[in-house]
Length: 164
Image 1: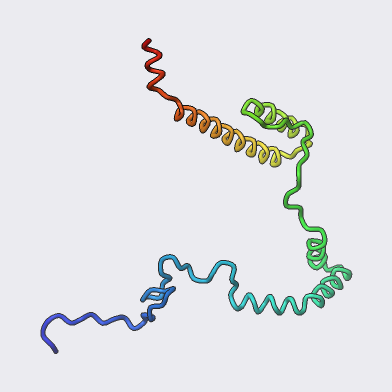
Image 2 (image 1 turned 90 degrees about the horizontal axis):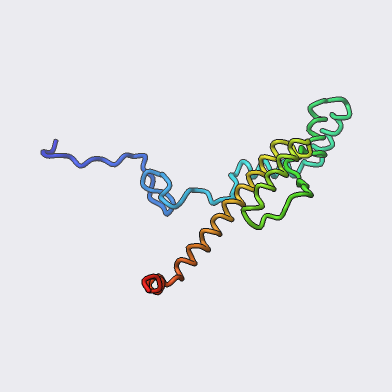
C-alpha cells in the first residue's frame, strides 16, 4: 500500500466523449439526440412491412367486415368515413371586426347562434375565444399608436405654449 491519498478511479461504465454525448453518455447541452423527424429502426421496419402488404391487409379486413366481424367493419368504416375533426362554420350575420366597438355585436351573434342551435356550444366557445384574441390585438394596436404619438410629441414646445 502506498502512503497518501489515492487518486480516484474512473468508473468503468463511462463512454468516450463524442460530439453529442458527455463522458457519462448523457446528451450534451444543445444536442437532444435523434434529429427531429427521424424514426427509429423498428418503426421504419414495421412501416416498410405494412406498406408492402397493405393491399392484402385491406382485402382481408374487407372480407372480415363482409362476414360480419364488427371490429373489421368499424376499422374499414373509420378509414372510409373518418370522424370529422373540424369543419368550417358559417355565420352570415357576423359583422366585420374593425374596432373594439364591433366586438360586442359579434359576441351577441355568436351567443344567439348557440342559443338557436346553429352552433354547438364548443364551436361558440372557440369563436368567442377568437374574438377575444382579436380584441387583445386591437387593444395592442391602439396602445402602440398612442405610444408612437407620445414619442413624436415635442413636450418642450407644449410646455412653453402652456406657460405663455
